[in-house]
Length: 440
Image 1 (cartoon, helix red, strand yellow):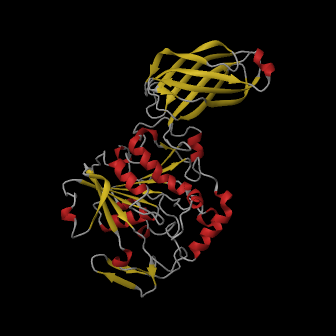
Image 2 (cartoon, helix red, strand yellow; image 1 turned 60 degrees about the vertical axis):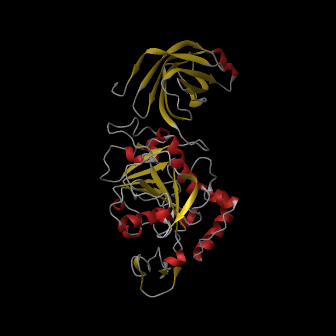
Image 3 (cartoon, helix red, strand yellow; image 1 turned 45 degrees about the vertical axis):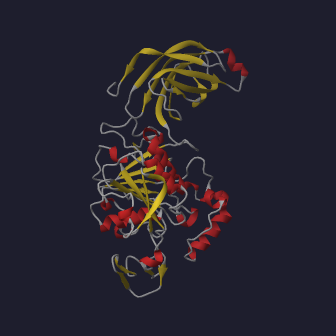
């Protein structure tokens, strides 16, 4: 059992002052290099006093899962906080708050799980605030950065941003890494953790509109940022504009309930991942993006990059398979091939695995990210179609189908069918052979 503390209102405004200012209990702050006076941070300003920042700590526990207790040095002893229980901090970004929205929702979700070490979770600016906490207290066990902010932090020294030395484990989810100046990408695109996850490539999330469709809104935001104004009015259009940036914490929240639906595969780039690099998981396994990233037993001495795909709406979780179909047509046929998986826990929708000319004795291979955790497979449904009805007089032969699960390399072998007519679902049964990850 543990606590979740919502670290509220961690927005650090700035006031013009001297080169250094000190506050009792929090330390001294400078406006000299590298904290200010650089190309990324031209303003030479000093931070507000803690009383002006007015950071609030909102406590959620199993004893009060729905209503927070606001705690400080005088009220903590009358609260549900206990030093014998584990603690988790959640730090929001510039435009969020901690007493409503996703922060309390995440706290309620997490109360059913017990982490082994103190864990700080920060979104956007909050990710770098978490890093600063790690610099001040080196004993922190884990920091999770949810799309750490790009403006004022990109390519800056590690003293100014989240980096792997801030905790024993730093895991990061990147969802909005397009350049800020040209595309208003709000998330940092450099590696800042031990485990850096780039779902869907880290730039454009499925279900979010391309920012090119919001040029006027982008101009307004850039004008506000140039004036140093981050207190933007959060409207429906603004939420659409920052959709990619917000997906990081939405993925994290869902990973609490569906951990194995966010498996990260090691690859050199998103393009290579899409082509099969890192599939299936290597001998030391694949980490789970999100809440259970700390269960990864692989090496974390150096930064490692992982990729995965998600859905375009809730639920976002996906399970990755490689499908290989040995197929044959009596003559070349222009067609579309789709397939679904049926397992002991459910069935997927039809997924397209091929479009083009189907040749005699052809092998079709594709990667699919399915929306259902089907479990052990029992059969596959196969269907093909063509825009040219003349092709329908040539039935296909499906010689065999092999399906491999990405996480553990388990392979399923399905018997073929001699005659597969068009526009008809054909159930292909499981053969008497299923192989585990060591199968050649």
